[in-house]
Image (cartoon, rainbow, N blue to C red):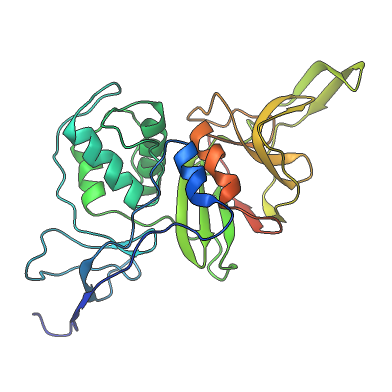
Length: 293
Protein backbone atom coordinates (compact mmCIF):
# COMPACT_ATOMS: atom_id res chain seq x y z
CA UNK A 1 0.00 0.00 0.00
CA UNK A 2 1.50 3.34 -1.01
CA UNK A 3 1.98 6.19 1.46
CA UNK A 4 -0.85 8.67 1.71
CA UNK A 5 -3.47 6.26 0.49
CA UNK A 6 -5.95 5.06 3.05
CA UNK A 7 -7.80 1.94 2.17
CA UNK A 8 -10.48 0.47 4.36
CA UNK A 9 -11.60 -2.95 3.27
CA UNK A 10 -14.89 -4.41 4.41
CA UNK A 11 -16.94 -7.35 3.31
CA UNK A 12 -20.35 -5.98 2.44
CA UNK A 13 -23.37 -8.08 1.65
CA UNK A 14 -25.63 -5.78 -0.32
CA UNK A 15 -29.21 -6.94 -0.36
CA UNK A 16 -29.83 -5.99 -3.68
CA UNK A 17 -32.67 -6.01 -5.96
CA UNK A 18 -33.46 -2.54 -7.19
CA UNK A 19 -37.12 -3.35 -7.50
CA UNK A 20 -39.07 -0.35 -6.31
CA UNK A 21 -41.86 -1.27 -3.95
CA UNK A 22 -45.47 -0.60 -4.68
CA UNK A 23 -47.52 0.15 -7.75
CA UNK A 24 -47.26 -3.30 -9.31
CA UNK A 25 -43.80 -2.44 -10.59
CA UNK A 26 -42.43 -6.05 -10.75
CA UNK A 27 -45.32 -6.92 -13.04
CA UNK A 28 -44.43 -3.99 -15.23
CA UNK A 29 -40.94 -5.36 -15.75
CA UNK A 30 -42.35 -8.80 -16.55
CA UNK A 31 -44.87 -7.38 -18.99
CA UNK A 32 -42.06 -5.65 -20.83
CA UNK A 33 -40.04 -8.87 -21.00
CA UNK A 34 -37.31 -7.03 -19.10
CA UNK A 35 -35.15 -7.93 -16.13
CA UNK A 36 -34.88 -5.27 -13.40
CA UNK A 37 -31.37 -3.90 -12.78
CA UNK A 38 -29.44 -6.24 -10.47
CA UNK A 39 -27.12 -3.60 -9.02
CA UNK A 40 -26.13 -4.11 -5.42
CA UNK A 41 -24.95 -7.71 -5.64
CA UNK A 42 -22.72 -9.18 -2.96
CA UNK A 43 -19.27 -7.65 -3.20
CA UNK A 44 -16.13 -6.90 -1.26
CA UNK A 45 -15.80 -3.13 -1.31
CA UNK A 46 -13.03 -0.71 -0.52
CA UNK A 47 -13.49 2.92 0.38
CA UNK A 48 -11.13 5.24 -1.44
CA UNK A 49 -11.17 8.37 -3.58
CA UNK A 50 -10.58 8.29 -7.29
CA UNK A 51 -10.64 11.45 -9.40
CA UNK A 52 -13.92 11.85 -11.21
CA UNK A 53 -15.50 8.72 -9.74
CA UNK A 54 -16.97 9.58 -6.31
CA UNK A 55 -17.46 6.47 -4.26
CA UNK A 56 -15.63 4.28 -6.73
CA UNK A 57 -14.13 1.10 -5.42
CA UNK A 58 -10.68 0.05 -6.44
CA UNK A 59 -7.56 -1.69 -5.23
CA UNK A 60 -6.55 -5.33 -5.01
CA UNK A 61 -8.91 -7.22 -2.71
CA UNK A 62 -8.27 -10.91 -2.05
CA UNK A 63 -10.78 -13.10 -3.86
CA UNK A 64 -12.06 -10.36 -6.15
CA UNK A 65 -10.86 -9.95 -9.71
CA UNK A 66 -11.22 -6.71 -11.61
CA UNK A 67 -12.59 -3.50 -10.21
CA UNK A 68 -15.78 -3.16 -8.22
CA UNK A 69 -17.50 0.21 -8.68
CA UNK A 70 -20.56 2.07 -7.60
CA UNK A 71 -23.45 0.99 -9.80
CA UNK A 72 -27.16 1.67 -10.10
CA UNK A 73 -27.83 1.20 -6.40
CA UNK A 74 -24.47 0.82 -4.73
CA UNK A 75 -21.65 -1.63 -5.30
CA UNK A 76 -21.85 -4.09 -8.17
CA UNK A 77 -19.91 -7.24 -8.79
CA UNK A 78 -16.57 -7.31 -10.51
CA UNK A 79 -16.99 -8.26 -14.15
CA UNK A 80 -14.60 -10.07 -16.46
CA UNK A 81 -15.77 -9.36 -20.01
CA UNK A 82 -15.67 -12.09 -22.66
CA UNK A 83 -14.13 -9.55 -25.09
CA UNK A 84 -15.85 -11.07 -28.12
CA UNK A 85 -16.85 -8.77 -30.96
CA UNK A 86 -20.65 -8.72 -31.06
CA UNK A 87 -22.85 -7.34 -33.80
CA UNK A 88 -26.58 -6.81 -33.96
CA UNK A 89 -28.24 -10.19 -34.45
CA UNK A 90 -25.61 -12.10 -32.46
CA UNK A 91 -26.68 -14.91 -30.11
CA UNK A 92 -25.06 -16.86 -27.33
CA UNK A 93 -23.42 -16.73 -23.93
CA UNK A 94 -21.44 -13.53 -24.58
CA UNK A 95 -24.66 -11.68 -25.46
CA UNK A 96 -26.27 -12.91 -22.25
CA UNK A 97 -23.30 -11.66 -20.25
CA UNK A 98 -23.65 -8.29 -21.99
CA UNK A 99 -27.36 -8.12 -21.17
CA UNK A 100 -26.84 -9.08 -17.53
CA UNK A 101 -24.08 -6.51 -17.09
CA UNK A 102 -26.13 -3.70 -18.65
CA UNK A 103 -29.10 -4.64 -16.48
CA UNK A 104 -27.19 -4.65 -13.22
CA UNK A 105 -25.69 -1.24 -14.05
CA UNK A 106 -29.17 0.26 -14.44
CA UNK A 107 -29.52 0.14 -18.21
CA UNK A 108 -32.51 -1.67 -19.72
CA UNK A 109 -31.58 -4.30 -22.32
CA UNK A 110 -35.02 -5.91 -22.41
CA UNK A 111 -35.44 -9.64 -21.97
CA UNK A 112 -32.29 -11.49 -20.93
CA UNK A 113 -32.47 -13.98 -23.78
CA UNK A 114 -28.91 -14.17 -25.21
CA UNK A 115 -30.15 -12.46 -28.40
CA UNK A 116 -28.71 -9.12 -29.46
CA UNK A 117 -31.75 -7.26 -30.77
CA UNK A 118 -33.09 -3.73 -30.78
CA UNK A 119 -33.86 -3.47 -27.07
CA UNK A 120 -30.33 -4.48 -26.13
CA UNK A 121 -28.94 -2.12 -28.75
CA UNK A 122 -30.72 0.86 -27.17
CA UNK A 123 -29.20 -0.04 -23.78
CA UNK A 124 -25.76 -0.35 -25.40
CA UNK A 125 -26.18 3.10 -26.94
CA UNK A 126 -27.12 4.61 -23.58
CA UNK A 127 -24.15 2.96 -21.89
CA UNK A 128 -21.72 4.05 -24.57
CA UNK A 129 -22.94 7.66 -24.44
CA UNK A 130 -22.51 7.78 -20.65
CA UNK A 131 -18.98 6.35 -21.03
CA UNK A 132 -18.01 8.88 -23.69
CA UNK A 133 -17.90 6.26 -26.45
CA UNK A 134 -19.39 7.04 -29.85
CA UNK A 135 -22.59 4.98 -30.00
CA UNK A 136 -22.44 1.93 -32.22
CA UNK A 137 -24.25 -1.39 -32.30
CA UNK A 138 -20.94 -3.27 -32.56
CA UNK A 139 -19.44 -4.31 -29.22
CA UNK A 140 -15.65 -4.21 -29.32
CA UNK A 141 -12.81 -4.03 -26.81
CA UNK A 142 -13.46 -0.42 -25.76
CA UNK A 143 -17.06 -1.09 -24.76
CA UNK A 144 -16.11 -4.32 -22.98
CA UNK A 145 -13.41 -2.47 -21.00
CA UNK A 146 -15.94 0.19 -20.02
CA UNK A 147 -18.32 -2.53 -18.84
CA UNK A 148 -15.54 -3.89 -16.64
CA UNK A 149 -14.84 -0.45 -15.19
CA UNK A 150 -17.99 1.65 -15.73
CA UNK A 151 -18.40 5.36 -15.20
CA UNK A 152 -21.56 6.54 -13.45
CA UNK A 153 -23.83 9.00 -15.29
CA UNK A 154 -22.93 12.64 -14.80
CA UNK A 155 -25.16 14.13 -12.12
CA UNK A 156 -26.88 17.21 -13.54
CA UNK A 157 -28.53 18.34 -10.29
CA UNK A 158 -26.12 17.58 -7.40
CA UNK A 159 -28.61 18.65 -4.73
CA UNK A 160 -31.70 17.36 -6.50
CA UNK A 161 -34.62 15.56 -4.88
CA UNK A 162 -34.04 11.87 -4.14
CA UNK A 163 -36.75 11.01 -6.68
CA UNK A 164 -36.21 12.82 -9.99
CA UNK A 165 -35.52 12.52 -13.69
CA UNK A 166 -32.50 14.16 -15.31
CA UNK A 167 -32.54 14.57 -19.09
CA UNK A 168 -29.19 15.32 -20.70
CA UNK A 169 -29.87 16.78 -24.13
CA UNK A 170 -26.16 16.90 -24.95
CA UNK A 171 -25.73 13.15 -24.55
CA UNK A 172 -29.36 12.28 -25.37
CA UNK A 173 -29.69 10.25 -22.19
CA UNK A 174 -32.26 10.24 -19.37
CA UNK A 175 -31.59 9.02 -15.83
CA UNK A 176 -34.26 8.12 -13.27
CA UNK A 177 -33.32 8.44 -9.60
CA UNK A 178 -35.27 6.78 -6.78
CA UNK A 179 -34.26 7.40 -3.19
CA UNK A 180 -31.15 9.20 -4.38
CA UNK A 181 -29.94 6.17 -6.34
CA UNK A 182 -29.85 5.58 -10.07
CA UNK A 183 -32.66 3.23 -11.00
CA UNK A 184 -32.79 3.48 -14.79
CA UNK A 185 -30.63 4.94 -17.56
CA UNK A 186 -31.96 5.14 -21.09
CA UNK A 187 -31.20 6.35 -24.57
CA UNK A 188 -33.60 9.11 -25.72
CA UNK A 189 -34.29 11.32 -28.73
CA UNK A 190 -35.45 14.87 -27.96
CA UNK A 191 -36.66 17.79 -30.08
CA UNK A 192 -34.93 18.14 -33.44
CA UNK A 193 -34.70 21.93 -33.25
CA UNK A 194 -35.92 22.09 -36.86
CA UNK A 195 -39.00 24.35 -37.18
CA UNK A 196 -42.04 22.55 -38.54
CA UNK A 197 -45.48 23.22 -39.96
CA UNK A 198 -47.82 20.28 -40.31
CA UNK A 199 -51.46 19.91 -41.29
CA UNK A 200 -53.53 17.51 -39.19
CA UNK A 201 -57.15 16.76 -38.39
CA UNK A 202 -57.67 17.69 -34.77
CA UNK A 203 -60.96 17.85 -32.89
CA UNK A 204 -62.86 17.31 -36.10
CA UNK A 205 -61.16 20.13 -37.99
CA UNK A 206 -58.26 20.27 -40.43
CA UNK A 207 -55.72 22.56 -38.82
CA UNK A 208 -52.15 23.67 -39.40
CA UNK A 209 -49.69 23.45 -36.54
CA UNK A 210 -46.27 25.10 -36.45
CA UNK A 211 -43.52 25.04 -33.85
CA UNK A 212 -39.80 25.06 -33.13
CA UNK A 213 -39.39 21.32 -32.41
CA UNK A 214 -37.37 22.23 -29.33
CA UNK A 215 -37.18 20.52 -25.95
CA UNK A 216 -36.84 23.45 -23.53
CA UNK A 217 -34.31 23.22 -20.74
CA UNK A 218 -35.42 23.97 -17.20
CA UNK A 219 -36.96 22.45 -14.10
CA UNK A 220 -40.40 20.85 -14.37
CA UNK A 221 -42.59 18.21 -12.73
CA UNK A 222 -44.51 15.23 -14.04
CA UNK A 223 -48.20 15.98 -14.48
CA UNK A 224 -50.82 13.93 -16.29
CA UNK A 225 -50.29 10.75 -18.23
CA UNK A 226 -52.07 8.31 -20.52
CA UNK A 227 -51.90 4.54 -20.80
CA UNK A 228 -51.15 2.91 -24.12
CA UNK A 229 -51.26 4.88 -27.35
CA UNK A 230 -52.33 8.51 -26.97
CA UNK A 231 -53.17 10.52 -30.09
CA UNK A 232 -51.99 14.14 -30.22
CA UNK A 233 -52.22 16.59 -33.08
CA UNK A 234 -48.63 15.73 -34.02
CA UNK A 235 -48.85 11.97 -33.86
CA UNK A 236 -49.14 9.06 -31.46
CA UNK A 237 -47.35 8.78 -28.12
CA UNK A 238 -47.00 5.54 -26.19
CA UNK A 239 -47.55 5.73 -22.40
CA UNK A 240 -46.83 9.48 -22.31
CA UNK A 241 -45.90 11.13 -19.03
CA UNK A 242 -46.20 14.90 -19.47
CA UNK A 243 -43.92 17.28 -17.60
CA UNK A 244 -43.96 20.61 -19.47
CA UNK A 245 -47.28 21.51 -21.04
CA UNK A 246 -47.64 19.28 -24.09
CA UNK A 247 -44.10 17.91 -23.79
CA UNK A 248 -43.82 14.37 -22.49
CA UNK A 249 -41.58 11.40 -21.98
CA UNK A 250 -43.12 8.76 -24.23
CA UNK A 251 -42.46 5.61 -26.18
CA UNK A 252 -41.92 5.78 -29.93
CA UNK A 253 -41.30 3.27 -32.69
CA UNK A 254 -38.34 5.36 -33.86
CA UNK A 255 -35.74 6.56 -31.35
CA UNK A 256 -32.69 7.40 -33.48
CA UNK A 257 -29.22 8.51 -32.42
CA UNK A 258 -30.08 12.17 -32.98
CA UNK A 259 -32.86 14.52 -31.83
CA UNK A 260 -35.86 13.82 -34.04
CA UNK A 261 -39.06 14.71 -32.18
CA UNK A 262 -41.35 17.74 -32.28
CA UNK A 263 -40.20 18.53 -28.73
CA UNK A 264 -41.10 15.51 -26.63
CA UNK A 265 -38.51 13.09 -25.27
CA UNK A 266 -38.80 9.80 -27.12
CA UNK A 267 -38.03 6.56 -25.29
CA UNK A 268 -37.50 3.01 -26.57
CA UNK A 269 -40.83 1.19 -26.40
CA UNK A 270 -39.74 -1.34 -23.77
CA UNK A 271 -38.55 1.47 -21.50
CA UNK A 272 -41.81 3.40 -21.95
CA UNK A 273 -43.68 0.25 -20.97
CA UNK A 274 -42.08 0.04 -17.52
CA UNK A 275 -41.53 3.73 -16.77
CA UNK A 276 -45.08 4.48 -15.50
CA UNK A 277 -44.54 1.89 -12.76
CA UNK A 278 -41.39 3.70 -11.64
CA UNK A 279 -42.27 7.37 -12.09
CA UNK A 280 -45.08 8.99 -10.11
CA UNK A 281 -46.87 12.33 -10.39
CA UNK A 282 -45.24 15.55 -9.22
CA UNK A 283 -41.71 14.17 -9.62
CA UNK A 284 -39.08 16.77 -10.67
CA UNK A 285 -37.84 16.55 -14.24
CA UNK A 286 -34.65 18.51 -14.96
CA UNK A 287 -33.68 19.16 -18.56
CA UNK A 288 -30.16 20.37 -19.26
CA UNK A 289 -27.66 20.66 -22.11
CA UNK A 290 -27.83 21.12 -25.84
CA UNK A 291 -27.23 18.70 -28.68
CA UNK A 292 -24.57 19.76 -31.16
CA UNK A 293 -25.16 18.44 -34.68
